[in-house]
Image 1 (cartoon, helix red, strand yellow):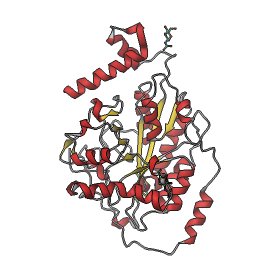
Image 2 (image 1 turned 45 degrees about the vertical axis):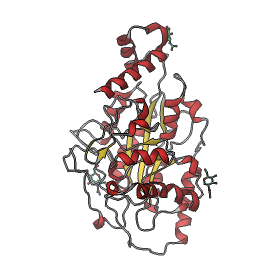
Image 3 (image 1 turned 90 degrees about the horizontal axis):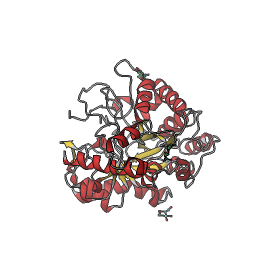
Image 4 (image 1 turned 60 degrees about the vertical axis):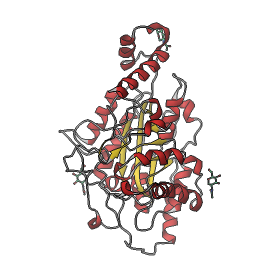
Length: 381
Ligand SMILES: *[C@@H]1O[C@H](CO)[C@@H](O)[C@H](O)[C@H]1NC(C)=O
Ligand SMILES: *[C@@H]1O[C@H](CO)[C@@H](O)[C@H](O)[C@H]1NC(C)=O
Ligand SMILES: *[C@@H]1O[C@H](CO)[C@@H](O)[C@H](O)[C@H]1NC(C)=O
C-alpha cells in the first residue's frame, strides 16, 4: 500500500513537472490530462519485442527471418525495428557466435537470461547465481566479441527471483531487470530504489530488499485476458492481433510499453508470427510509434520530460535494411555436423502470467526435438 502511494506520488510529481504551471495545485486535472494528453504533448507509443533463449539457428530464423525481417513497417526514423534477445546458453550447441555477431551489427540488444536456465535457480547460493547470470555476458563478450558494457539487462528463467537475485544484479552492475509482472497496465517502469511497485509476492518471486538498489524494473506487462506473460495466444474471443491492439490503445499516451515477449518455438508457428507482424505493421502506421530495445526505452524514461524518441534513437545504430540472412546461413553450413541433442534440456514453460490456469502455457525455448519439451507453468496463482 505504502509503495503504491509512493509510486503514485512519484508519478504525480513527474506529471506536474511535465505539464507545468498550468496545473500546479490541481493534481486531478493533471492526471486527467496525462491520461488524455493534449496534442502538443507528444509521448511516444512504445513497443518492446523480445525473444528469450539460446542463440541457435532456429532462434535466428524465428526471431529475425520470420519476424523482424518480415515486418514491413519502419520506425519513424526509417530504421528497421530492433529486438532484445534475452540469451541463455542452454541447448544443443549452447549458442552460436555467428548469430550473436549478426545481431550486434543490426543494433539489437543483448540481455542475459542465465546460463543454465535452471528450474532450481532459487536454490543457488549467491556465488553460483552470480556465475549463472554473468556467464552469459562473459560468453558473449569473450567468445563472441560483444561489448560487455552493452549487456545490461536480466530476465530470470521462468521469472523465478529471490532476494539475492536483486543483490547479484546490483553488484554485477546491471541496469535493469525484466522478470516481474506489472502492478497495473498503466504503471511506468521505475527504479527499485525510487519506490516503483515490485510485484513479487509468491514463493517463486520474492524481493523484500530490492528497494535499496538503484536498478530499473521493466515489468513483463500482461495483456488483458487470462494468459501467461510470454507468447501471447488468442484469449477471450480475441485474436493475438486484437489483444495486442487493445493493449496498445489502452496505453496510448502513457509512455508505458506494449510488451511482446516471445520464444523461438512460438515464432516458428507461422500463425502466431503472422498475427504479431500484423500488429506491428498496424502500430507503426500510428503516429509516434516506436519499436525499441529495452535500453532505448529506459534511455527515454531517463531523459528530460518532453524528449522526443528520435533524439534517443540517434545515439544507436540504424538498421537500414538489406538481408543479412544469407551471410548467417552460410556460417551454419560450415559446422552442420549434426551435433544432435545431447543437451536438450529444452523445458521452459515460462508460464509467467501466473494466472494459474495451467493451460496454454507451453512456451519452450528452442529445444532439439519437440518430445523433450515439458511445459511446466509457473506453479503459482
Ligand atoms: C500545449 O498547448 C496549450 C494551448 O495552446 C498551451 O497552453 C500549453 O502550454 C502547451 N503545452 C506544452 C507542453 O507545450
Ligand atoms: C569485452 O567488453 C569490453 C567492454 O565493453 C570491450 O572493451 C572488449 O573489447 C570486449 N571484448 C571482446 C573480446 O570483444
Ligand atoms: C500455432 O498456434 C496456434 C495458436 O495461435 C495454434 O492454434 C496452432 O495449433 C499452432 N500450430 C501448430 C502447427 O502448432
